[in-house]
Image 1 (cartoon, helix red, strand yellow):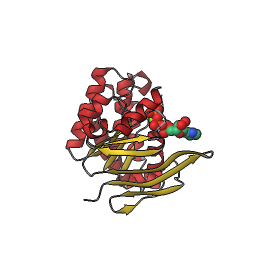
Image 2 (image 1 turned 45 degrees about the vertical axis):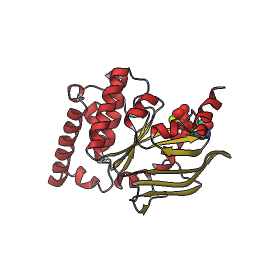
Image 3 (image 1 turned 90 degrees about the horizontal axis):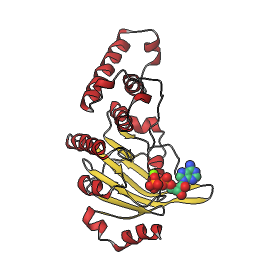
Image 4 (image 1 turned 30 degrees about the vertical axis):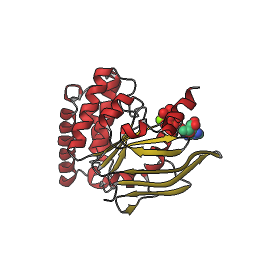
Length: 254
Ligand SMILES: Nc1ncnc2c1ncn2[C@@H]1O[C@H](COP(=O)(O)OP(=O)(O)OP(=O)(O)O)[C@@H](O)[C@H]1O
Ligand SMILES: [Mg+2]
């Protein structure tokens, strides 16, 4: 079966430094794929290159059978690929509800003029978006903080808003960059359970995470990156037993 996301030989330099040196990755449709590797391996950069933020120097990205190399972020979002950031972005003064609405509305094909002139189609669209924002907030247990500014939220709730924002775009595949990092263990578990639920409903997920217990529990397959390349891809047990993977982690520690 064609993977939902296929990355082949992806290369990217920063000021002459080879940060991605030919990354190969296949995310099977419906999978909860894990992406691991030592600090600086290039995981976040890979997400940036795949999601259209950086332009790769070489290699290809495909969504299903379709070439998606070099598409702009909004084109990729329209094609169903949405990512979250390692550090949540956003507008601190806006409420949770406003955040969800803003990102839901920020879709290609959105008719700005219709919005300005308040056509009935635009009002209907806004009502639909609001309904979707409520539904996502309920599902992520953010409904009781919908009117709070994002700054008033806990670290874990901010991560959930970031996930909710991504869901507003109705993704087929979600790239998550350390959505559980820096939150307390019980909230990390809660976030993990939300992700498992979304994956069971058919959402394909690719998760960057340093917590190996979480990766082991959630992810199949697991892809390992080191020094700008993919080392291997397999079950958690397979990659953990791989001597190259052990060396990549140990090499950084010593
Ligand atoms: N915008 C940038 N400009 C220059 N160098 C960068 C930039 N972004 C990342 N790098 C460098 O690219 C390399 C890979 O960084 P990246 O953030 O992708 O690693 P990572 O695997 O996500 O690490 P971590 O697990 O610590 O988040 C690092 O050496 C980093 O310093
Ligand atoms: Mg990173």
